[in-house]
Image (cartoon, rainbow, N blue to C red; front, side, top):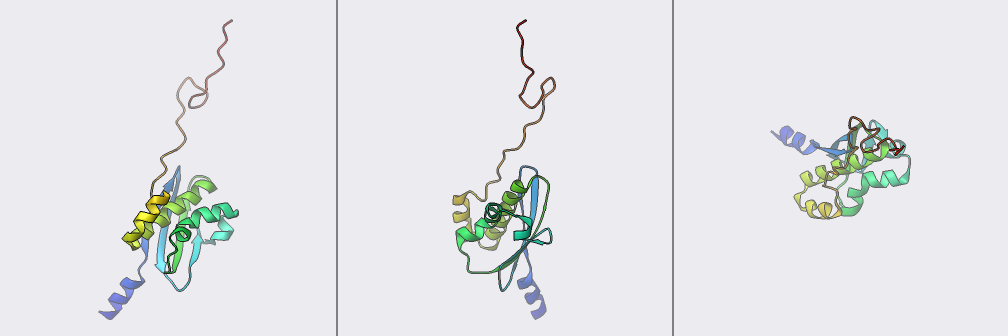
Length: 138
């Protein structure tokens, strides 16, 4: 029975974050120090710019949580910026599952809202979603 309790304490929290066509599956596991791996790479190796690194790890910076987590992320689809926001969304959802009191601060920052903006589909007769050929009078 003790082994069962130990295993449940070791268990991870999983959540999914989305942005445009990017989907991030996030797993939070309590650990001695915070370590973030994205697609089996370190966060600094995957997101090269500091802006993308900060965007992905913003939930931890905003709430100032004393508990440390090992974060494992599998992200697919979209571009690198959309993937960073999808990781942020997934981490935020996992943190609210871990502790419900974190929902307020994360919601206030807008990290729990799934950004619905995506590329509009192309319509027949047009060049792009709304772009038309130039109209000529004569």
